[in-house]
Image (cartoon, rainbow, N blue to C red; front, side):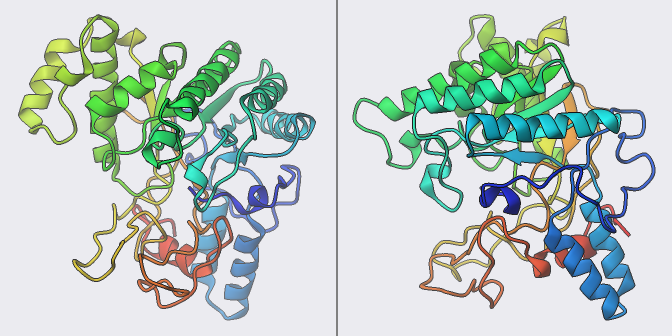
Length: 389
């Protein structure tokens, strides 16, 4: 999971900073047409620098695409910093969003041992430190509206999944405790929707992720989120989300997750099971949001046998922006399509199992995680589906 550039440096760009040249999203996009108006933070400075450079070269269509991408509603990421610092940073975003009549999407990314200490490793040092940090975020949100994307990869990538736990599973147990604590604090806020990590449809089966969600306290949350920083299609995400939501309802009624269909179950069989086990009152079912920031062309299929470790999630070539953010999805249980990952920011320095230093799929050294990646940004704009310019 790649950190947004400003946050990777431990800083948050002021939401009041001048949005020099960041073109607004097309009419109706920010509000999801008939949906909620979503907040657009100040753009990555790299986006503006790239747009200016393209304009100087006379490449005005490409420049307009970069500006429009940067001017589309997307999440604001928070990690690190002291409780006082994160409180002030969140409060600044909440006030700026309120002044603009928009609802922010807050991605909280500070759980101890996040990302299994990989490209975006870090987080709080202890559970107590994490709780104090979460308390500060909670105070800053207060009674204002917010969507909270709680700790990307925290449940799909547990310490036990990457060999970072002891024989007793101490760190994994602590992870569940930390997420439950955050759910308890944030979900108690009157106008905040809280979503937990459920990975993406190319990762865990429904039967595997549902017990993790239950143990992490999804019962007290609004629901879960899918596809953060990944590339799976809207259709695949919605199918996976509906299966998870139905399985959660089934488990809450005393069933076993092992009896639920998963995303690889034949469509007709899964649909029949879902129809038979969807509660009559769907209002209490868990809802979900999806990340459509880079899924316009779907996931990358690496050429067979070329890379020792293809890292299909890491700066894959020839991807495009996905559908614009909206809360008017037209799909039952699907609360919103969001741009959670900041499109144009690198996933990290991808080596794909080779000695490096170049990314063999691109023939260049990729920028570090969270840094602006002009070549990828231009691909995303040019291959956007639907088109952005």
